[in-house]
Length: 154
Image 1 (cartoon, rainbow, N blue to C red):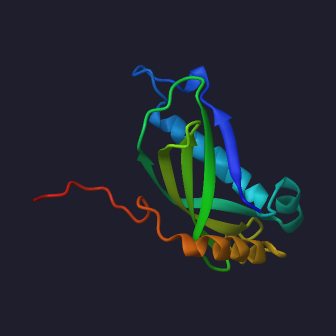
Image 2: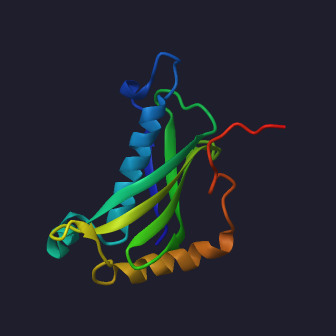
C-alpha cells in the first residue's frame, strides 16, 4: 500500500538558473498529491460516484537541493494526521541517488461538491487513510514538518 510518484525534470521546468524552477516543484508535488488522492481510492470514477473532491487548504515547501533537466525523482508520502474530512500530508522528493531534495507539507480537505463545503470522506476512504496513518505514525515527525517562515534573530 506504499505510495510513490515518479517523474523526470522536463526542459520546460528549468529556469534561468539552470535548475528546476520553484513553481515546478509545486507542480510536481501537486501531481503527486493528485496521484495520492487516486491511491486512497478517490480516483475520477469515485469522485464522480460520490460527488466528492479534495481541496488543498495550505502548503509549505522546503527546497533542499537543486534538480536539473532530465534528472529523475521520486515522491513519497506520509500521513501525519487526519480526521473524518482532512488529511495532514507530508510529501518527500528524492533524486535518483536517494537524496532528499524537497518536501511539501499540506492540509487537504474533503469536499461535497453539491454542498460546496467540507464533508466526511465517503465509503471506505477514511479507513484507507487510517491504515496509512497507522503505518506512518511510528516514523516520527519529519524535520521539515511544522516549520514557519521567518528570520531567526540572535
